[in-house]
Amino acid sequence: MIRALPLVLLALPAAAQETAAKVPAPDYFVASAMATSTAQILAVNCATLSINPGAMSAETGRVLDRLGEDGFTAENLVERMEDPADRIAVLQDAFLAKHDLADGAGAEAVCAAGLREISEGSEIGALLLEVEE
Image 1 (tube, one colour):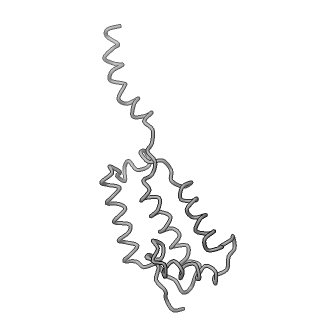
Image 2: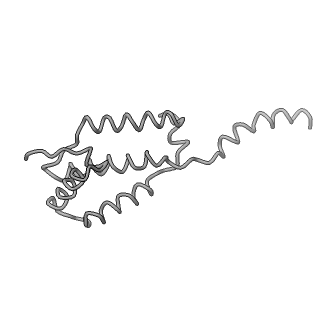
Image 3: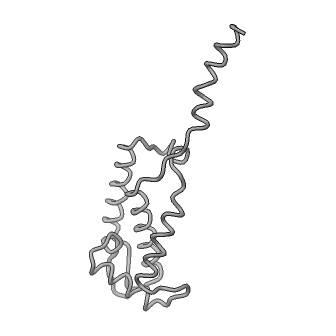
């Protein structure tokens, strides 16, 4: 019995790591993931909108820096963070409702939504540029 005790103690840290609960994705990460993905979808589906590459790069850098400050790395992100897909979907559903964008909405409605986001100065709007066709 006494000889087995050290083996049990050595196994505890690994077992604790395996059963450690993931942490919820930080709100800033969820908001940024929603904004960047939605801006990209708007730009792809509207000929008069484009991604603002400088703003997109700055936003990505800002979020990566904050994730690093919070102890997230490329190596541990998936293991430490809960999947934020459901939370992002809630925000995207709210965006669709705000702009009355049902499935299959036409380019005119998509463009109007993007232009409204730009005029409101939203996180999504800050990632978009109005361009000529």
